[in-house]
Image 1 (spheres, rainbow, N blue to C red):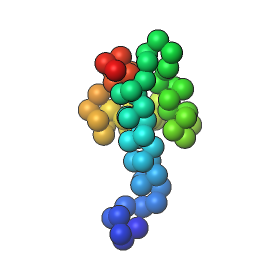
Image 2: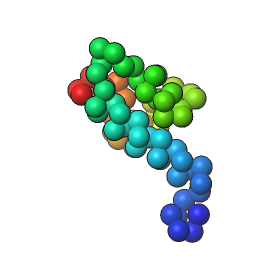
Image 3: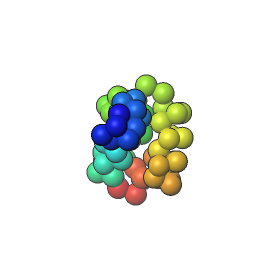
Length: 68
């Protein structure tokens, strides 16, 4: 906690968001969905994921996927 200046759970959430962001940027929208990518990254609540993603990256995950 002191080393990263965050709680372990917040760190894990951030790691999952970063991983999902990278996967969304490189995914093929014809084959991948936001839900499937989020699931592969350990996300269990797609709605919460979408809200957190938008808060961190300033855009919806679906827009990131479509622009890949």
